Structures are given as structure tokens and as C-alpha cells.
Length: 121
Image 1 (cartoon, rainbow, N blue to C red):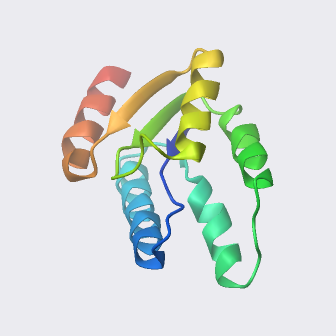
Image 2 (image 1 turned 90 degrees about the vertical axis):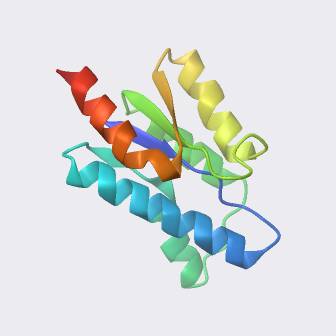
């Protein structure tokens, strides 16, 4: 199984964006530490922004192309996820593809991982 981690990112405050990015990495690490194969699109794009690349709306097409290769979508429910253009597109695409979609509360990631592993058996 290959999991896709959908996380809100864009915001008017750069500190909020940085916090969302770092939380996505922490969630990715916890999932990977449990043996869960997960793709985090922010891990692909944010480092490029850090070296000066400017993404436009084409980033959504790239992220959706990656999502289409996955079996399941995990939505990291950070503040703003319900308004995030990217997350809403990712959820819509997951529904079109009939992919399982899970909501992940960052503060309850250990319980989420435990339940996910239990249900994989």
C-alpha cells in the first residue's frame, strides 16, 4: 500500500506555512517509522521553494499525478485544511478514484498509526 499525505500549506503568514510543512514532515516520519509507505508532496516542493523556485497552480497537477499512483489518502487536519484549495482538490480526486481517505489529527498520530496497522492485518 502506498499512502498520500495531503496537508494544507499556503497561507499569508510564512510562519504558518513553515509550521504546516514541519508538521507534515513529522507526520511522514511517524508513518514511515511504523513501516507505512507514504508520499508527502510538501517534501518534494517546499525545499525547491527554499532555493528560489516559484510554484503556481501547476503544482496541483503534479501533486494529483502523484496521488493517482497511491492507494490511500491521509488528510492531515491542521487548521485551514477545510479551506485549502490543494487539500480540497486532493480529496475530490481521491473520491473520483474511490480511494480510501482518512483524516489524521496531528495530536493523535500515534493512535492513528496503531489503528491503521491493526486494520492492515
